Image 1 (cartoon, rainbow, N blue to C red):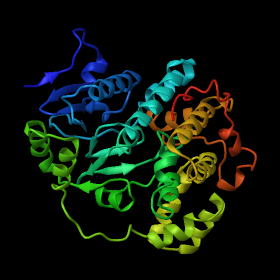
Image 2: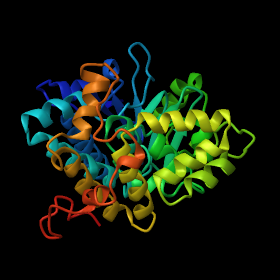
Image 3: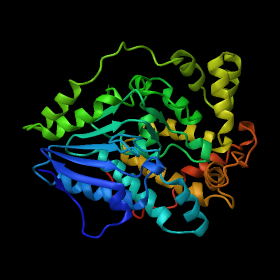
Length: 371
């Protein structure tokens, strides 16, 4: 019998995050399909509370997480954080914006360090905050509908939610490529980039989910083993254009990378350069430094660094690059962001390092408890 975890009072966060325990698994369904299951602060809090409850429930051997579609049980996993809320809260100087990032990053850490299998069904769009609640999963499943990206430089932000940590651990320099350009990849490419573990066709997901709920598993390991036995095998290949990516994105500075892309003179390099030119020149510099720094960091230190960075995204300048990027994409929708700099070459060497200065001491940092 299904044990649905609900409070008597209904609120948006409860409608947007559906929870149940059935058989030996705890189930989380993001249920905000109209917003591509984008995360609000209430949703982050509900996810955190659910994971702590599932962790302490001996009936639960593993946790499953999916995004629901408008009509179907599976849809877009999660398109990220609620950027309209970011814009509104930043302009109103609302402290819930700071709380959102602190609590979201703590949730990301909880998932990466979770003591039970946490299984993410990364169907459809998986971007930004959706990567934050899936990259720490013990089993990361992609489908033929997966569209994965960290497109934050296009809104004057950076790949947060642990993006420095997981992008820096992609093979070669794929992480720099994805983080700087915001390039979208499919399910197979996600596996080749080390950002997913297995492929299951989207049409098979409802039956897989049902079987997980109805099978009398005896151990956590048996849940994972059964799921891995359902993966569709495919001929592993090299990530597309990997040699060119490693050649160009290994270079020291964004300017050198853009010049190398011009010299490549291929359809791939032209498209990559076009993506790079849409991004905030300042944030391209910041992100290259972020990924390079994170390569030598553990997860907790990376999340603390990203919490410092996101503070500066909204507070460093009189005009926030992030607020402007969100305005152009989601508020006015004119797709003409007025970035602080017109070109990569206009960014001064003393500008981007400011993002890495912490406004807190080690004792007062909002994520000081992460280990």
